[in-house]
Structure formats: structure tokens, C-alpha cells
Image (cartoon, rainbow, N blue to C red; front, side):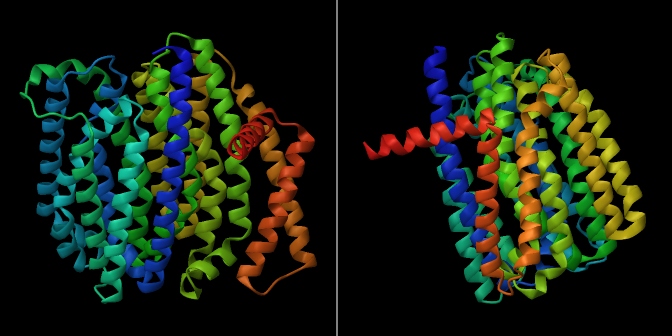
Length: 486
């Protein structure tokens, strides 16, 4: 595939994947709000206690084979089937481990019902393990439209089932049903639409992939254990209700990361892998993406922090107001996460999974240590530890990526981020002054007025600063509008 056609396919993939992913997340967001109004924070906290292990097992069962299959130039049916079998075996092992550990988990959290809940969700580990290989095969073909449609369909049906169960007062079982319907439908559709074929299982087909996949696997294990540590500690020391507030705030504020950074990363990994020898091109793509992601996410996240209480009151109601402090902190910290998460795709696309592993061997244990220290001062300590650990996880890979892989310097990244960040900070200052002048009592009116004020002021500042990334996005949008009107 030549560079021109590759670029068109990549842009098409980002457009399709982005639009459908956003649609999926908007629906998930809406259904999540409905469920939050129907179910108590304690219910979400109980489920979050165990979904921590489900998320980790989902990544562990893949063993890094997805990244290996995407990065490999050609993949045989034997290789894909052999990886699939290994993934399923690992998923089964983790399901059995959860079943055996259910009583211990209930004692750890001090929640007797966790014992029953662990038995109920254990089979999800096996179901989720069947998705990795077919997803990788579709990703290799840049068929992100199919992946996104499947995700949208499974989320839609799973959420509808959950809402019906919640209305029927099934409590936490509503969320269990949601997980099963979503996982089963996603697995069946991925297996059906991908080029996955049943073939002979050969361990010899898996071994050549292990060198790359082992580094990816170990990196993901370290990352996920570190990323879920805060939820385990909150559940253990603060209880189900506080974990419910914490996990919902984390989910809601991750919206820009899920719908912008992750979409771009998922699409660009297979694309960058196809011209990894051209480091100047890779560097150009990186700085363009960093600028564009900053332009889109910085004002959204800072605006969300400013409107936190109004957003919670309007969407979830008064009983969810204790999550306000979590919402504000996560919104502001995610400014770094939106940019930091882009690094992994560039390390992997250049075949530097080994370097990414070394970085995570430093940043993630540091994160766990900070969180363990932070819990000594309660929730406030956890939040401070979360902030510091995110900064460590942001600066370390960014410094190494720019200097070692891209042969550039970190100051170039900050130059790309400076104008969007300055415009967002000035936007926040205008919002603060506006609130002093006009303090609205209605959450809806506050979001509408201050949202419009923030958007207009940010766009004006970006035009004034003549930011290259903003102007490029504006040009692309205008061309799209003109094309549709023709």
C-alpha cells in the first residue's frame, strides 16, 4: 500500500472509528446516567471492586499477542488460531483463580456479597479473552469501522438490558447482566466479521511472537496493576459508596481520552508500523497529533472541572454530589493523560516494546508506592498521590520518546501544547469572572451559558494566537462543510 492510499485509509479509519466511538460513548454516557439515577452509589462501588480484576484479566489473557499480530507484516491462520487458543486458556485460568479467591476477596473488602458476585462474573474472563485476536485481525486491515460498529451494538444492547433490570429492581445484578450481554455480543460479532479461521494449533507458531508480545504483555500487566491500585485501596479503606463516587467520576472524566486520544492511538499504531523506517515522517505525525489532541481536549477538560458541580447535579442528582472533588481532580489531571497515552503507540510502532517496558518498570511501581503512601491520609492523600503519579507517568515516557525514538527534544512537545493550554487557562479565567458577575441557580442554565462563553472565548484566543494545529483542524472542518454543501 503506497503512502497516499495509506494516509487516506488512516484518515477514513480515524473518521469512522472516531464518529462511531463517540456515538458509542455518548450512548454509554447517557445509559450510565440513567443507571446512576436508578441505582445507588454503593451498587456501582460493589461492581467496581470486582471489575478491577476483570479489566486486568482481560489484558492478561491477551498476552500481548494482539500487538504482535498487528505489527507483523504477514499473519497465517495457524498463528492467529494458536494465539486465540493460548488467550482462551489464560482467560480460563483467571476465571478459576477468581472462583477460588472469592471468599478471600470478600474478607479483604469487608463486603460479604462480593463472594457471590465474584462467582457470577468469573466466566466473563473467558468470554473477554476470545475478543483480542479477531480485533487485532480487523485492526491490521484498518477495519476500525467494523470494530466500532460492533462496540456500539454491544454497548447499546447491554445497556438496554441493564436499564430494564434496574427498573425491575435487580440492583447490582443489573450491572452483571450488562457485562454479560455486552461481552457475549461483542465476542460473537468479532468472530463472525473478522478473517479469523479455525486451524491447527501449533506452539511453534506462537513462539516467534513471544519476543515482542512478552514485552507488551509485561508492560500492560504493570500498567493495569498500577492503574487499578487506587480503586482497590479506595474500596478497601473507604467502602463501596466512596468507590462508587470515585469510579463514576473517573469514568465520566475519561470521555475525552476514550473518544479522542484512544481512537487516534488505535488507528495510528498499524499505520505507523508500515513506515517505521521513516523516522522524520513518524516525528512529523507525532507533533501534529499532539497539537490536535491538545486543541480538542484541553478546553473540554478545564471546562468540565469548572462546571463539575452543575454537571453532577444536572446529570446524576444531589446524592452524587460527594463525587465533585473526584470529578475536578480527574478532569484536570487528564490533561496530561490525553497526551501521555499517545506515547505507547509510537513506541510499539517503532518496535520498541522493550523500551516501553523499561519505562513502565520505573513509572508504575512508583505509582503504586505513591498510592500506598497516599492512603495513609485518606481520600485526599489518594488524590494527591494520583496527581503526582500521573505527572511521573507523563514526563518519563515523553522525555525518552522525544530524545531516543524521535531524535528530538521535549521542548518541541511543550511548544505544541503551549498555545492550547494558554488559551484554555485564559478561558477558565473568563469563566471565573463571568460567574462572579452572573451566578446562575439553574445547573442547566449554568452549563449552557458558561459552556457557550467558554467555547467562544477559547476559539477567539486560538484565532488570536494563530495556532497551527487549530488552524489545520479549522481548515479540515471548513473543507468538510463545503464538500457536503456541494
